[in-house]
Image (cartoon, rainbow, N blue to C red; front, side):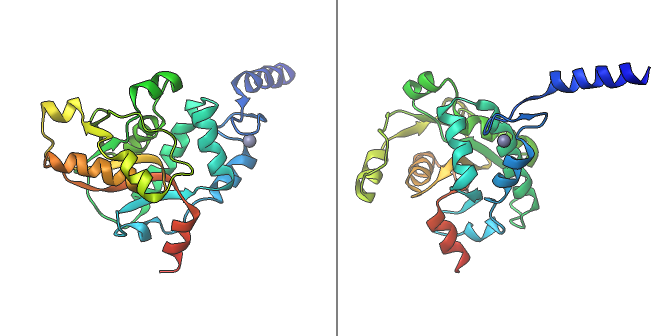
Length: 231
Ligand SMILES: [Zn+2]
């Protein structure tokens, strides 16, 4: 009897196990133990330090190592399931922080242009926002913003070129056109680097008298993380 119990349990474990999206080792959790440990090493200890910089930012981790790879696998290897644990961790970190911004915030993900959305099949920021807002217990508005210009990759462009290419990239989304939100907006993106995307999104909403309190992101560049540490 004991043998059969073990036999069936073994079969069940095998059935329930899937591959770790980062290293393909079998795992019954979102990432294998090794990759989860590597990812957690990228976590920023005091993310609230970034709040109140040139643009209030709340990041989960630093964009390097395993976290960089996880975000690349999510987007370019099209592994949308990675968004759930990452959004969850960001939500946990938000709840633990002492920012105390209350519950009256609307989470709006940075949108993709429809062309890019068609190619990728999903907007990673929207998936991360769904997981984040569930844990942080905040309202989610997926259609608060729309992207109207299909900006090319920003790598290798100067700061001025980056800022210029984003000018007019967004318009206020259908949901907010229909009903003006009373609460402040909290933007969400997968990566925060120069902050130009967040600024442009906030400007677009600001023109319609919608206030943006800041942005939450899974990762921020190493330079920003170092700057916050030395403050
Ligand atoms: Zn792994």
